[in-house]
Length: 215
Image 1 (cartoon, one colour):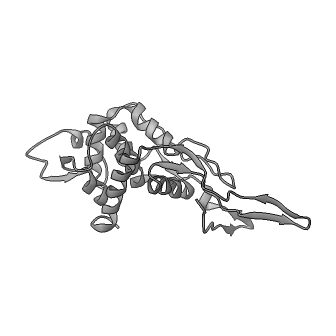
Image 2 (cartoon, rainbow, N blue to C red):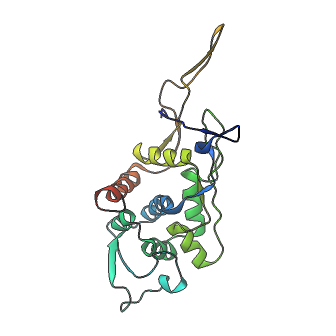
Image 3 (cartoon, rainbow, N blue to C red):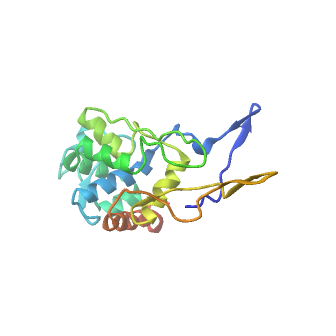
């Protein structure tokens, strides 16, 4: 859980602590949340979904199964690796409720104050009431924000088999009289966010991003 680098910069004479801000959109990082919820709902990473559209937006027509128009198919793992918006939008629309997606996002850190050595803004989520808006959010379009800290926290949670552990930056603080603060010296579990079997499948899906996907 040790954070090795925490970078800030000075702008107009004041410190700009960008790593703690949650102003950037979650974008396709949110597919990790949606993928985790879909796995928990019973869909395996190998589940195949055919699709069309959705490269730059999700329209109502992109959610409708159409054998003539759906010329491409991908497994859920491949869709994670290649960041295929339509696949995640369709699967979420068919298999998830707002409560399930919001609950998974909360468990993984969105809308939560997470323990750390400095104050970090909450990564936000606001799920629209309409079906298309819900599907867009599940695919990573709009309605969620992400701090760099939460990005690291999310990846660490998956890497630790679904256990969210307390991240720490400061090892020790001393003044002229000696040590006045000591950071965590052992692994501290905040909570279990995912079952190990789910985290393992999410890991394999994330690896596809590097092996043959967008990275």
